[in-house]
Length: 523
Image (tube, rainbow, N blue to C red; front, top):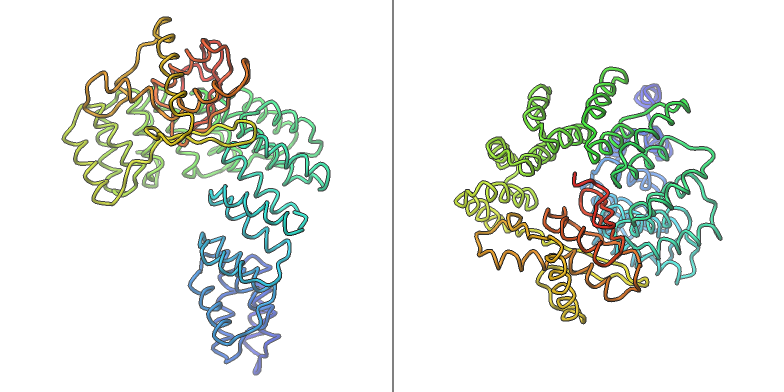
């Protein structure tokens, strides 16, 4: 492209075709910033873009996050009543959606007189990517009702949404549709594997992976991550070794998946070894995701000082995510002095993040520093922040039921509370003692015990026990990390109910069975 620019600069007269060639050339070469610069030079020459240029500029704006330029071009199209066919409109939808501006993306999408499969795919895929799973699935259904046969793009988006919500039944249905109507290419196949794993069915994910004849790096990375999320760190490491034997060179994403897997399983020596190999043998500079995993591994294993020393030895300043991993380890291991100094660093960097502030508040509460707790909670209030409530969902016969602590709106609320009371009584008979230290409020013990018993995952489990036949496996999806008391309680519940209870929290999967958890009480 450098030679093309030199030729362009020597031209006395440049027409729309010339500029169009340059804009699209830079887009196709993966140089979106230069594509935008060419468009601006074209405007300075007094020329407006045709359809090809507009689409190219939209692609460049989508890639660079240059929403202001994209919106400016959109405004020009509207002001001059220019024809916005399906290709231009779709490029606008894609540009807005890729930058998370879904109100604008929806508006353009809804005004389109004609849509094609790319139009649907642009919005569905990005809604799913940004965590708007319900809306992505609603749009996917609308696409089918409108008579469009989904291709791989919207199907992958729908699978991602199922993964997010834990909708195994719908995910299986989409898998069936793929087998009947689509070619199971690598991208779709990997999305199906990921869906089964994130919906709690690791066995199905592994079975599908084993059937893949020609595996690419992405499929290896995803399966390593699947093992890791389910606490199967040694299996993840074995798969990593198998991948290397197959002459597939690991990349930064491979090591991110591997280190996360080793972290979830508490494999400290292996984690340290492969972190060093990544840096020294493969020449991969540790990114945030690698540092989060190694710090999390060390800190949760009680080696918080070593984790802190590692951060001190790095050339870059630790990010919020890395400091939060260290803080979480300090909280879990009661290393409160280092925890408080880490909390101070976090407050300096990001004083308005509600999730981070909640963890900082919990650290001070564990240290019984109630003045600091009040100070942090005031900070949350001043920023208009509220602690994100624990929310758990369970899929029963294809319907998703969601529970939040203190929410009494569910039609079976009374039966659920009776089931919780019954379970609590039976659990205490065989040794359960509530761990009230996991209530980070200065309250009476009895009140703390009641609050613990109403945590959202317990409501979901009680509902599942009420509405499924004996022996049915329960899968619960929670938005936050399971607290230590609920972790103990669910072990007892699995024994009393003689059920396997699977809980996916914000960190990983826990498989509870016969009074034990797959994590070995390390999470």
